[in-house]
Length: 441
Image (cartoon, rainbow, N blue to C red):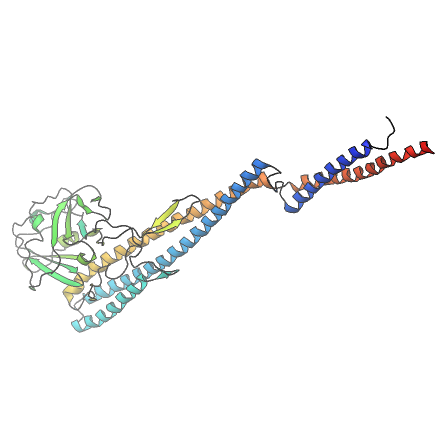
């Protein structure tokens, strides 16, 4: 190799290698200090893009988890309000049963009435329970109701083959046993509308048919409901729910139906009580046991838009859970009229009729509680699923982006040694040119 002084190629080549080693060592230092092998797009363009997308997904999933947990907190608040109402209704039923006992005087019942009035006011307080400024149980966050619905009470404990034009005296229970209603028996029935108890009597039963069981009754008090009519019949179609869809009996058989003639909460029937009395004044307990087995198949609700609460629990639009809270105020439960009149128990007859009113109110409250519990249970599963998804996405992102610290330290040590070796060789290469001076002496 020629001895030159203008271009020291050995030094230049060594410098290039030094720069490469220095750059590699710097990258190792950065990876070790950040704990990541991809710190910018220049390190791995596609890996960086995938990693950033996964980090966005992880942050979104973590927010979903927060949303789910706050939603469960709101549901817990609502559940607490409903549970308090259930406890009150259970206590009220106990009080009403006591009031229906004729060991009490009407003065005693008046005292119990005061306790009932206060408890009903507390139910309204429960309905106004708030979470983050939102009133939860007052019906303002109900599901869509279109059209408005009317109360439908259905009795499926009768012979499934019961027909509209069967004689009342031929009525049988679900096993085919006769109810023992005779032509000279009388049927007393009471229902509550707008806090007022209406009592009617069909006396005698005669040859009246089932369809007209409630149609030709006489009102002993001479009072008629001002803004509601009663419809009764036999069918396997009970009516229409809040979405306008038909509601059928549980087993598809005919049932005895007691239906409010007016839609909405103002027209609701809060309870139905039937009493079959024989001619000699004795009570037909067999008939009463069966005929008082009415359940609320359709709840009376006012027409309303969809105000249900939406809980965002997914990373995409409309990945949500919707929850509507039915109205839990005393008016919606049939315990108070729109003019503020509360359910009356000041007489034995009214107290007796109030028992079924409380029974239906408890059923409404338990339905709401069940719906809340079902969504809470779903939210627990949702939270577990989100946690798992976030964990697995984080693990994948770690594989792409996290540095293997042992591997990086090994590479750093190697490159550090190479940098030091390159520095020594550069010093040697620079000394090579000085040897030419000996030729010039």
